[in-house]
Length: 565
Image (cartoon, rainbow, N blue to C red; front, side, top):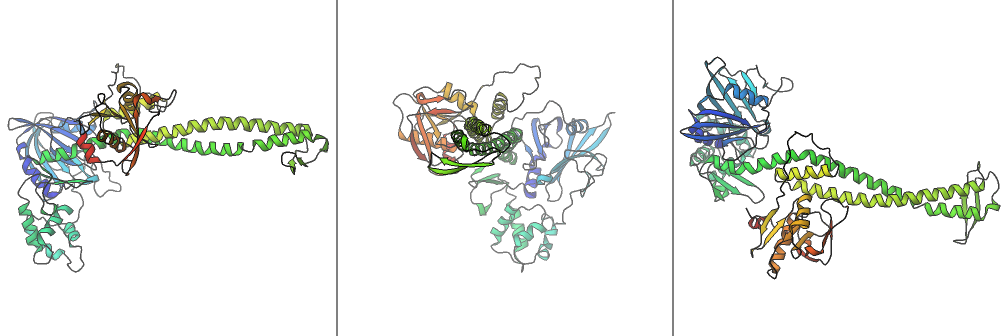
């Protein structure tokens, strides 16, 4: 992405439609992000501003967000000082990623007062700050205390700009000084430009270099000016880089043709950030449960190692049984107070030396060996049972860890939470007194090239519902062979199924599995009639027979094309 100073410059111009608009309502959806509902030019606008460490931004949005019931402190201060105010101006500071909204508001006694809403879009150091006209801080969405910080963001302190190196504003005559800031003999000119010029991103510097061909003392300033002039053509552009996407407010020659263009910069930013932000928010909510599952996985792993040690010790039980039998057979040869006795082992035909406790009788020594044998035998039997259960638990928690990686909706977080509660892994939340509605399980739907529906469960609740209740006996069931993954069902009318349908459904099973990044993944498939829930087993566990196996390679683009929106 490139939410740099140039993008901010273009976006600030676009948002000039909000000037003279009234801030009717302010809502806060998380610790770092707000929605300002603004009435301007006979239309309603939702302005999203965010100091998220990864997705800091500001733009108009048409997306729907949830808001917590209790307003946080920053929201209370914002409502007090700027809700109901009129936006007088929106201006960028230099060519930096800092923007000020100057707002005319009213205080408690109805007098006109000036307020400034400051946005600092600086990655993990991003912030949203409200000050008065003299730049005295009223509140910041992130507090910086005087200790160990270059500046203080707390109510009552004077606002100071972020401490940054002195850079040249490329939109003024200052840019003429650029050659004197560059050491052309040391190389890495692009990095030197980034360090010397305000608001440039690596993406934009690559575009300058693309236009210049090769930097030298004569062409560097003309190249900057030429590229800035071209960037004045606003055409919001999204570039699909395969594993990653990037965007800019104008087409970039070194990236070729955009994969998609948008009508406004806000539409572009809304499209780019919304799903990423929602996914990050969901991952954050799921993180507590991920920690619980990881802890249980590690605890089970330690338990398995201990049980293996117990079984190793229990393997000595047969020696204790033999010593007891030999002592009983050769009792007459044992003298009082001996610490050992050597007798003929009639099992092997060789001599065997048996350790004894000299303070007890030969008969008690024999009984002690029998007692040890019986204890170890019982211990072995119990350890073997516990080891089988622990291995099943290990597989269960491994599946859950995989499912946590695939979470994309809040409903899926809720389903995982319910399952952990039902399994006794976490405690139930305190009841709010409201009767909970039955959660409707939503499966993920895809369609093969031939038009057959494929249903995918992404967690154990969805898997159980799909396999045990939703699917019919003649439907085909798919699962990666010996690899954690989703249950996948290919629904089809009798006789209307082809090999391509099977391969595409198998590909979905491989994609929604732990082998997502692998090639030639083995996938078993069989009819639902041959899939059975294991009695008393953890959620998601089944057995199946009469299966066939195909080998497929996961294909993300194919998955996207098959998805039913």
